[in-house]
Image (cartoon, rainbow, N blue to C red; front, side, top):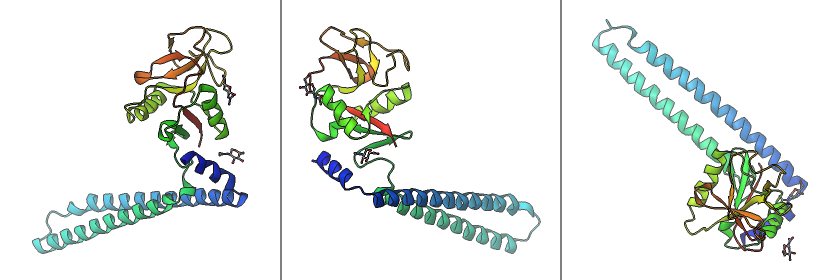
Length: 228
Ligand SMILES: *[C@@H]1O[C@H](CO)[C@@H](O)[C@H](O)[C@H]1NC(C)=O
Ligand SMILES: *[C@@H]1O[C@H](CO)[C@@H](O)[C@H](O)[C@H]1NC(C)=O
């Protein structure tokens, strides 16, 4: 269902939408810059206040009290400013067109990931790869242990997820496992594929980051990855 919606959305996207999205991203950048400036100047201001406040130990009790009141007031001002900045950021980032990834995709370190487990639909490896291609992405090529941890953390949210197709296969030459970007399995991280056999040419990812060879004809969930 969600998938169909995404495809329709993609078809509906016009140059005007694209322009709008660009404007949107620009707006976010400006808002973040303004917010950062306000926060930094607020911090400097608070720092100056704290640094100068107890500078006159010989002041009498009344002026100390009024000093405290002034401090409280300014602190409240600082907090209010922070609250306004939060609201501003929240408002600017709520527009779905401003989101860096399409609906239903997860953003991680400037990439977007799609986990089909949310679709409740299983596909063969080649059909999974085809799905990713249609969404301008590819079956996930995992490039370091941080990325592996991220993917594992998502898998952990679905305790009944047995495995997931990723972009690793030895279909071209038996025993030579290649990522979909053409690099050898050992190129990014040390790793081996368990249970390798002639008729098992597609790699599936399981808990703990382990990789198993499966029949490419098996049906399963999959993970796509693309630039955001
Ligand atoms: C995937 O492979 C199956 C058989 O192995 C084939 O029938 C099907 O057309 C392929 N699908 C795609 C999208 O390549
Ligand atoms: C994929 O990219 C093409 C060209 O940039 C674009 O026209 C199309 O809408 C994109 N499709 C999706 C599903 O994002």
